[in-house]
Amino acid sequence: MSAFLATVRRDLLLALRRKSEVLTAVFFFVIVTSLFPLGIGPEPVLLKKIAPGILWVAALLATLLGLPRLFSADHLDGTLEQMALSPSPLGLLVAGKILAHWLLCGLPLVLLAPVLGLQFDLDASTLGILTLALFLGTPLLSLIGAIGAALTLGVRGGGVLLALLVLPLYIPALIFGAGAVEAHIAGLDAGGHLSLLAAMLVVAGFFAPWATTAALRIALE
Amino acid sequence: MQWNSVGEFFAMGGYALYVWGSFGACALLMIAEPFLAKRRLSEVRKSLIRERLADELELQQRSQ
Amino acid sequence: MRQSIIHWFKFASPQSFYPLAGRMIPWFWAATAAFGIAGLWISFFVAPTDAQQGEGYRIIFVHVPASWMSMFIYLVMAFWAGLGLALNTRVSGMMAQALAPTGALMAALSLWTGALWGKPMWGAWWVWDARLTSELILFFLYLGFMALQAAIDDPRRADKAGAILALVGVVNIPIIYFSVKWWNTLHQGSTINLTKAPSMAQTMLWGMLLMALCFWMYSIAVALTRVRAIILERERHTEWVKHAVE
Image (cartoon, rainbow over all chains, first blue to last red; front, side):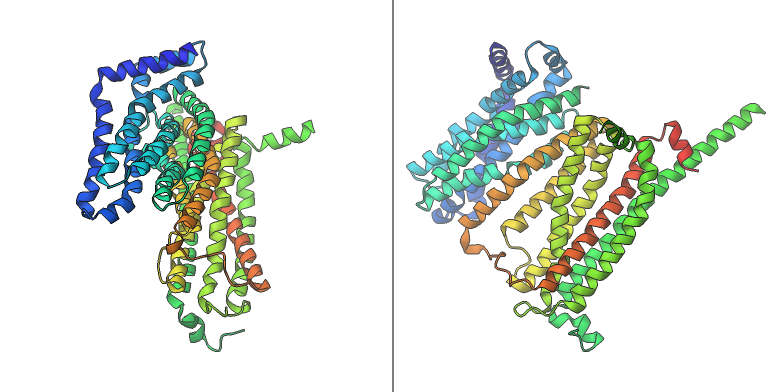
C-alpha cells in the first residue's frame, strides 16, 4: 500500500514541476466547451439541451490529452523497467499512476464542470448531477485510457492511435454520464444512470490496472 | 417464381438501386478481398523464390 | 488424451499449418460457392415478395449474414488472440491478424447494406438505431485493432498487444451494446423499431441461413489465404520456408 501511495505522490510531484502539461488539458476543456455556444448560437433552450453532451465529449477529449504522457516519460528514462523489477507488484504501481492521472487530468474537470455548466444555463440541481456523473465517470476514463496508453507505448503515431483505440471504449461512459444529466433535465430519476456508471467504475477499477500491467509487460519485453 | 420477365427481375419492384447496390457491393468486395489476399501470398512467394535463386547463384559463383 | 493434445499442438506450428491451410482452402471455396448459389437462388427466386416492404426486403439476405459474421469474427479473433496470449502459440496471433480485415469488411458491408435498406424503408440513409450504432462501433474496434497491429514493428509484440486489445474489446462489446440500447430507448422520438420486422416466412429464414453459411465459409477461406501469406512473411528467414516455396 505504501508503494501505491508513493507512486501517486511521486507522479503528483513530477506534474507540479511541469505545470503546463496539466493546465493544457484544463484549458482545452474550458475553451472547447466555450466554443460551442459561439458556433451554435446563444439560444438558452438549445444550449441547455446540448450541454450534457458537450461537457462530456469535451471531458472525454481532455482526459485523452494527458494519456500519452502517462507512461512515456517513465518508459524513456527507464523508471518503468525499475518498477517492473521492484518487489511490489507492478499492478499496484500502475494503479497508483492511474490515480495520479485522474487527480491531475480528471478531478480538475469535475471541479470546473459546474462553472462551465453555468454557461449553458443549467440550474443548481442539474449542476450537482453533472458534477456527480463526472466524478464517477472521469476515473473510468482514466482507467480505460491507461490500457490504451500502455498498448501504444513507444509505438509510431502513438497519440492518434491512442484516440482511435480508446474513444470507442469510452462510449458507455459517455452515454450514461451525459444520460444522467439529460434524464435529470427531463425530470426523470438519474439514479439508474449513476449506479450503472458506478458499477462500470468498479469493474474497470478491478480489471483495467491488470490489463494495463499486461500491456506494459509486453511493451517492456 | 414471381418474375415475369428479365426486366422485371432487374427492376426489383422499384427497389433496383437499393437491392443491387447491396448485392453489388457485397459481390465486389467479396471478389476484391480474396484477390488481394492471393496477391499478397503470391508476392511473398515470388520474393522468397527470388531470394533462393540469389543464394544459389552466390553459391555457384563461390564454388567456381 | 495426452496423444490428442500432442496431435493438436502439431498444427500450432506455422510449419505444419501452412500446408494444411493450403489443402483446406479449395474445400472452403467450394462450400462458399455451393451455399452461395443455393442462398442466392432462394433469395431471388424462391422467397416471396414481402407484403409490406416489396422487393426491397431482399437486402436482408446479405445484410443479416454480414452483421452476424462481423460479430462472430470478432469473437473468433478474440478467441485466437487469447489462445495466443495464454499458450504462446505463434499461429494463433497470425490467425487473429488474418481475421481482422475480413471482420472489418463484414462490418462495412453490414453498414452499407443497412444504409441501402434504411433509405427506402425509413426514408433515411442512417438512423441512430441501437443495432446500427453498435455495428458502427464494432467497425471502429476492428480499425483500432488493425491500426495497432500495423503500428508495431515487432510481430510478436504486435500479436500480444493486439490480443489484449481484442480481449478488452470483447469484454466491452456487450456493455457497449447494452448502453447504446439504453440510450436508444431514452431518445424514443427519433427511433424506428427494427425488431418489429414482418413475421419471417420459413423460406426467408432458409435463404438467410444459407447466405450466412456462404459468408462463413468465405471468411474462413480468405482468412486462411491471408494467414498463409502472413506465415511466409514472418517466417521468411527460416529454413523450412525456403523449401516450402518450390
